[in-house]
Length: 147
Image 1 (tube, helix red, strand yellow):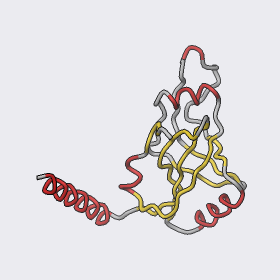
Image 2: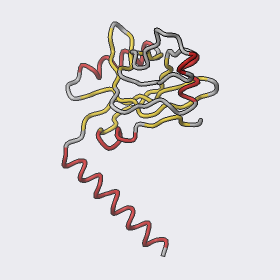
Image 3: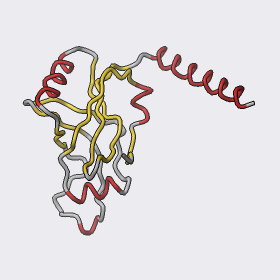
């Protein structure tokens, strides 16, 4: 399962509560662009609307700009493919105040492109400082263990 792109800030800015695996409705040239590593997951989120889940703000630039249809919008809203039970769980979590749907990574599973989606709660400033402190102490311990 090669990972094409990852939202590295998500784990720092959010406390991950639950993760889901979702397919994405894409055009063929978007799949090629993702596999070339051009997609970005920075600053995007998912919404549940009308019994379906959509990813908003995901930028997938064209694979071959001169060969892409003129109507192509690289930041269009794309539908995520989940089963009904998962969508109902996401709707319930969306009603809870303070929770958001954050994408974690884009990867392939067989010939399909999948998105790892997480229900997350935003971290406060002191939580982020605690994360940095823990990361630094772990790094120091690893250095000492090498010696």
